[in-house]
Structures are given as C-alpha cells and as structure tokens.
Length: 140
Image (tube, rainbow, N blue to C red; front, side, top):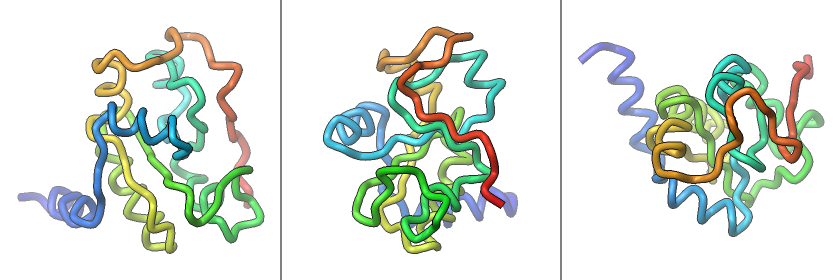
C-alpha cells in the first residue's frame, strides 16, 4: 500500500462517510453541502443545486465557524458534507476540517460522480446554478 493510500485510510477512519442518497437527505434536513471541485470540473459536469462552492484552497477559512471569512450559515453544530469529483480529495478535506474542531465534517462516497449516477439533482454541464453560493476570492 502506498503512503497516500495509507493516509487516505487514516483520514477516512475518523469519518462517517455518506452515500449520495444519505447526503441528499441530510441536506434536506439542513446540512451544508460543499462542492470543493475546481471550476473546470463544475463547468464540464454541472453542479449540485444549493451546494456551496468552496474550492479546496479556501476551505478551512470558509468553513471554520470561528473565522471572520466563514460563509454565512456556517455554525459549529451544522453538519458539513463535502464532495469532490470522486470522493478522494473530499475525504482528506473532511479530515482537515475535523482537525480544526469541525466535528460534523464528512464527505460523500464517490463524490459528484456518484451523486450524478444516483440520479440526484444536478445542473446541466456548462451552466451554474443561480442558487449556488460561489466563493471566489481567497481571504488572505
């Protein structure tokens, strides 16, 4: 097993990862869905309506409830569900958020691709959801 595979297994050991269907139910109950994919993937494949867009390099600042740069609605007790393209980088990202004390952070098994293949709502490729809060500038 490679070092990165070992690190991924360690990161995932502390998470209660969700299937796309579980994530959709949690979002309907008030969890915050966060898309960490970069713009080219969102443009190519579409988006999850209502998910916050926070690219990986800004994640900690935008989701730390104690940060002055946090997204509106980010609270310590609100569940945070991350997804990337296929569910690898989001596991590392959820682990990083947990190290900041965001104990509700987790990710979607299989990422956006699994969400889409499960038939859950997405915007068509090449269009951004008008309801999606995009975060574009780094706070520092």
